[in-house]
Image (cartoon, rainbow, N blue to C red; front, side, top):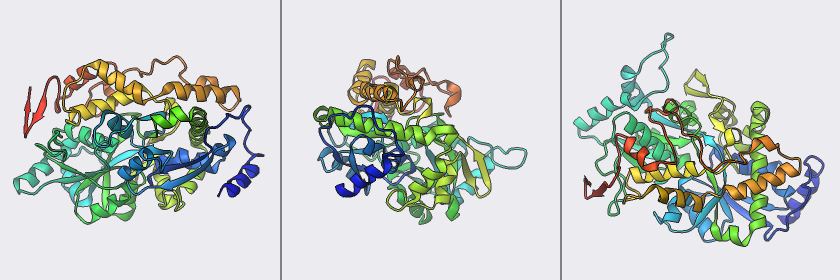
Length: 455
């Protein structure tokens, strides 16, 4: 394998600018894990475009069965790093589920998810959805349109089941956010009951991303939240209808991260910088020239060793539009963002949002002061590593100075109310005030005791 990769390095030397100064790498043979989703693209591109090799890195990419297997692989050292759910490093570091100190020097993307319901549920929602003049449904679609459907199922004594990919996934929190914004309770967690279904109107459970369409078709779940290409796959198979993308739910929301153990970063600081440099270059390539490279990225991702879905399905979201029903294609140029809007910078405010959602639904069972959210964010998200890697790229002539937020304190400007489905603004600097502003969910001193909320 190493001999093959060295050969590839020689072949790419003529097409890729060589770094001005090669870092003295502590470890040059690395194995990274990923899940078969389009937002693993920076890893695939860094490999296929030779950016890892430019840094002297000999990388193997390995698809993983599910998010738990992936996380365990990073913790036990079978994997040197991985494409991760942003909630995974945070949850592991605070000891929710598997306990380990995981950090991220690189945020992999913005947006990229959708919520899909079965054809049967869609038909029941339609009477409650406003129409455009041409008869098409008006977007974004609120969960208020789902509420009467769920109430009807409840009246019949039938549980309403939906799928998400992992308890600390963006998909879990986005699905919960959408449901709660429409007046549906997605359920609480407690230390004694980690089902997440306490007092739930809609019962959420875990399904691995590639299995979502088949699980929907089997009738085990009535809908799901997942990343691409598995929403568009439901449209192509004719088994479901996406009702909202996360771009419409929360404009330019953070998605996956690249995760490594804190120990790996401490023992291999130059290797960590080199990996971060390669990933930044991959993200730049993915968004360059108004997404001009996306068709090539689609071809790469369609290969069986990466996502393995039909290129036509992957292209639906990767090339600037999204298909809600067959023939109903709508322009969403920012559905997948990999570099613009400082997508790759690991903002503390992104970490804080995930922590607020953990607290909102009881995964963080006790109240915490604002300072705690900031401390945890700083222990996991590492913009200092990112900026050091970015500075090297600028000095090498491989990136532009103006493309990086050098003077950021790690917090984005508050997300305005108009950019979020429930019309409630988000400011990462004041997490408890934000929690207090949300009508459904834990706030203040509240805790879940049995099936009751106390405090």
